[in-house]
Length: 317
Image (cartoon, rainbow, N blue to C red):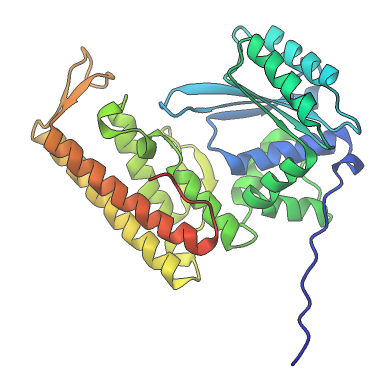
């Protein structure tokens, strides 16, 4: 029987990178982790007031929230450094951000994390994360393995933020697992997580269903204004037959969901209670609400069937 050799995965030594290289790697990887309205890298220009990268994305309620990333590729990261960065970030903004994430290239003790998190909360920042080098590596390998491979196999990332954004949007996933993570990201947003009766924007809900159908069919995910968010692997291009079949059925369920929603509007089963048609207050007949919820749950279960096959964490259903 022939011997089989396993490819060994060595840990990444981020401390070998310059501060600029580390920030570029963080910036590029973030495009694969979330769907951003805007994501700007300030570290390249200097004078960043502690905030190397600032992003705006939707929270669970569909409202925009600001997330600030501070990159600290230090050999020994201390709570003094973390607290200093937090103070600079809060002082530089009109309002505290929704979340601060400090990305560190080395180890970080639990005590240091606790001190930084407690200090940030005392400054009005509700969500705080400190990624040690190993935790950032986990994020990279799961969400942005293609970026990681390109970077550490000798192909330098562009130096300008716009060029990095374009590169990541066009970069093919390195394997089916990364491709599956990009598909999962389509569904981690309010249109698929908020109860139907709790929706705050009917137009946004309808748009989200439509752009998800389009992304699964074409591989191109666009935001509400038509700007490219990222490219994903279309359902029909996955090699695994189970994945391909599950995603095909997901599209059919989403099409049914959109048809039922549109029919409800036409038949008056969904009525706006706001002074403006697109306002946040509306009434939906219970029978239609249950039908929409059931169809959406069916779509999410089908997606989970594909994600399970790909080894990607499942969506909450």
